[in-house]
Image (cartoon, rainbow, N blue to C red; front, side):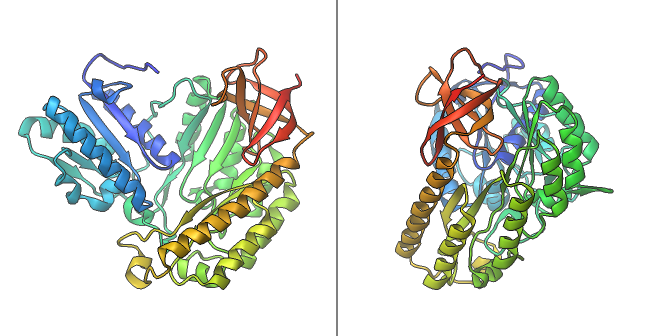
Length: 443
């Protein structure tokens, strides 16, 4: 990719974590472009390196600390190089990060507008800079992001920031602050800009999109507005919370063909005892009722989830409840993790991390094995069916095959045969693996 704004100075952003971090990096690029920076594709060509971080699990933070050690060596060969840490890890560790010899500045998720000033102060004084103040108002709604992948087919649009749920295991409310929704007019404006730039799919992002509200506009109304921008452009969203997903949203999804029929609905555990300790504010029974309602309104909707193995106090019976829920729901896919205690959370303060590591690993492996079976079963049911896919590019394994996704977010691989990235193609499923539908184009 070559997307330079100017020849110098140049910024390289390395992004870790969720889709919201990708969108945050795009906001940062827009802010820095206004300050005269160009974007470069390699850290070795940059005068400013920013690492946009994730703090959701310890292994993510350890990986980022390793990258800082790498950039420490790079700075020895280029003393004028500036290295900054952004995002959730910056918010969580604050001044501790400034103790790292590679780090020159630290900025939390609500401080990106201040980056030009921080850089100027650093350059003028030679002193390390930090701003980790959280805001109750900041949404960056007036900023048009500079897309990280200008040749891509999907554009991320953050519709809200922060989270009010305070699940006991989660660090996000402490690193991203209180929940606030963005003006829907600015969301629609950004959607129009993305469509005009050639994007074929808009992905609306929030920690809990179902609780979006700006004035009289709730999430279902927002989804309808975005879907009406262009009926040929797909609309997706992430992430939903089981306690807040309403029939109104499901009916809106069913009413618009370009709203993708896929819901990511994190359950985290199938045990009511664990859900209460996690402060999820939904029960196993509520979750299963919501699943039944989704399938009643949209029988072709795919459902994916997140789950944690080995949370504090989890017994074998609790874990069996989770396996049983997976068997009942038959998720199409899942993100599965073993519990990683995060400092400062309610769980870290009140619940001992008392499930032995080997038990966590064994339980995680069991749920992965079960989900692999369920994913394979889900994909086998699609053999013989036809789907419209949006082509995202070449398959990872072959430049003669393309990869695209169905409305249900399932990956399809098929011979290119003259088709190209960004095109809608109808395919027939010939075979499947647990992760992929193997297809042929039929149009």
